[in-house]
Amino acid sequence: MPGCFKKTLFALASIISFASFLLILVAMGTQKWMTGKILCKTGVDLVNATDPELVKFIGEIYYGLFQGGKIRQCGLGGRRSKFTIFPHMVKKLNTGLHVMIVMFLCVALFFSLVSFGFCILNAIKVPYRAIKGPAGVCLWNFLAGGFIVLAVTSFMAAVKLHHLTERIANFRENVFQFVILEEQFEDCFWLCVASATAHAVNLLLLAISGINFPKIKTKTEEANVAPEDIMY
Image (cartoon, rainbow, N blue to C red):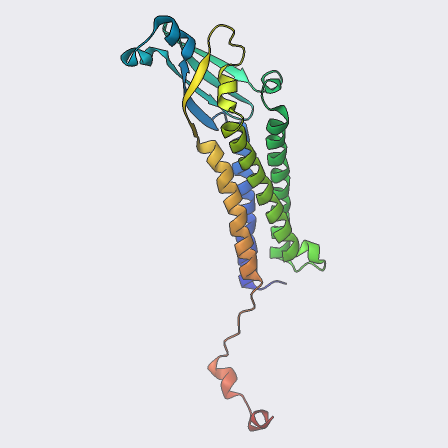
């Protein structure tokens, strides 16, 4: 049976792993990974709008991995619309990269659950196989955190290098053209970053659990030392 200290660490690690699983699940299911302001360039060019009039042509956009929405402002008031990324819009985006982001997060979900299960196992008993012990738990946490980092990095690349927001804003826009004035990562994106951080904390806890702290002898134990023991 593992000691009380190790039991506590593994119990804490299991809670963190499950929390990471929930964070990824919530992040994947929400619509606000990115928000931004979009300018109707076509409308501005048609009326030759000046700075005070630009407000009438500035709309908003938000989206996640699967769906989102936008408010189009082209001089005639705001028009709200919603859209889904799959199955049609994704063809106009960097399809491979977007699918990879979803796949990375799905794999991270799996490894987070595996980590949770193995932490519970190690809190209850000492496994006889190394892969089921602390080394295995370290591996699952490293893989889960690694895949989350890959997903986050890939999403940032899609936004910054492949102009994801602009592509989404102009999807099926035959008359008007939109340009991005500003964009920012929202809470759901940072949930994934928090999930990766949680697995890093787990690795730290597992490293601490492997340290063999010296046992402190009590005064009673010291008093029971015989003279013969001292000679030898």
